[in-house]
Amino acid sequence: MSRNLLWLSVMALLACSPKRVHEEPILRQGDRVGDTEALVAGVHNQAVVDQARLQDRVDALRAEALSTCQGEICAALTRGELALGMTETQVMAATGTTPEAWSVRRAGPASVLAPAARGMAPRDRNGEVALVQLRNGVVSSYSYYEAQGVRVVQKPRDATAAGRAEALAEMLIREGDELAARGDLDGALNRYDRASVLRPDDPELDYRIATVLDKQLRPVEALIRYQLFLHRLELEKIEARGEAHAKLADAIARARERIMILEKRGS
Amino acid sequence: MLRLSISSARRTLPLFVVAVLTTVALGCSTKKVSRIDPSAVTDLSGKWNDTDSRLVANELIQQSLSAAWARRFAETHGGKAPAVIVGEFRNRTMEHIPVGTFVRDLERALINSGLVQVVASSEERQEVRAERADQQEHARSDSRARLGQELGANYILQGELQAIQDQEGREKIVFYQVDATLIDLESNQKVWVGQHKIKKYIERKRFGW
Image 1: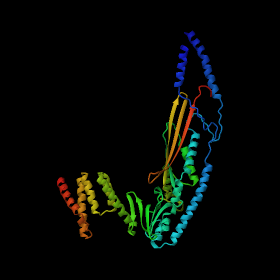
Image 2 (image 1 turned 180 degrees about the vertical axis):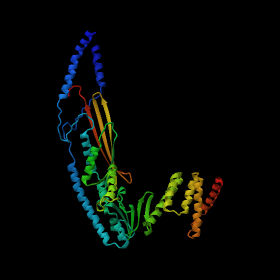
Image 3 (image 1 turned 90 degrees about the horizontal axis):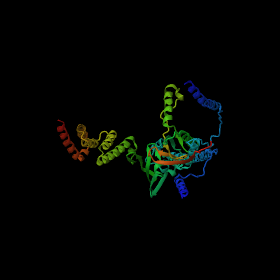
Image 4 (image 1 turned 30 degrees about the horizontal axis):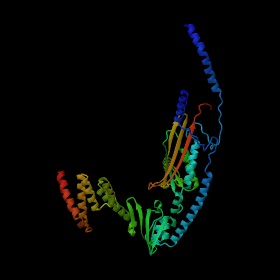
């Protein structure tokens, strides 16, 4: 009886012990670890062939594009920039791409070139191209991915530095408005401030900044901005350039009211 | 009293003699050094070693060179190879592991494959920039390296090494996982992820060498 008990306890002990691993090793002492030299050499040879083939195609497209260009389009091609009036070949030459980089949709006289892969959109000198629209075989508009959204170039002025600044300021103001509506006043002020660098004499922007400062309970700065807003409108009136102030009647009335209140509080 | 100290000395003398002889024997043992094939598998302690480093390097090289991202980039950029910067590989294990060995192997393979261009890392750049700045002052004008001509990277290669251990008595399992990730520097998009796992079973015998 006691012997049986002893056997049972030994068995129980053995059952509790951890299970041994009996896997066959995949590498033993003295084995050799292979190298990847042959693989790297093979990939290198293929890469050289592929790159030469693609470079040939890009060069051919560039030669064709330059042989048919004129004036400003030739200059833009040389700089590596898109321009209105370019042909499809010239678009590829300006961006240094081949047709594989684009997804082309055609509908009658219009066609649209979109990047074949969003993460690898073609670029010109100014940025990442979002879309190129062609009408009757020439570019009628094109757009770039910018930090604040998509910037569209439809007129020659849009492609200049001033046009770009104008578009960026517009995008920043829109983003600021959205942030203000969500209650992120610091974020909104940041966007308006950045926009005011690009568009320094915009009374509407001053009014937006004044309103945000007023909401943030910063009366001194808000007062200055309200006064600046009215001052800029006066200047516009004197220069007889702005009928815009008529549209801002509400803003003007509100600004005057806030100035009075803030001045009273200050005194 | 004197008798006691003599008897105690008699007892400790043999022990002392044995200790001296052992020390002399150990001191006289010959050291053997041999050059062996670097690709040979040599596991001594069971810790991370050169074999693990080579295995990781080989696997990551195979995975990275067979991935389509570089070819796709070249096709959408007129044959231009993407520029890659090798960032930090973090060792998140408790062991001291020099990750630089397999990272350099990977970097070398990427450069030699011609699929990508590799730009100097931030540490390397500091030295190069200092040298270039020095040239602007001291080098002959026709031999000066120009400023503002650096190649901006399209992607950054980062990674980490993690380990899990399990031990019971004289048996031990160590599991290493190496992850490498290639991230688009503009969009933060991960365009490629490479991974290699190593599992080691270490058993210490009770007797024998």
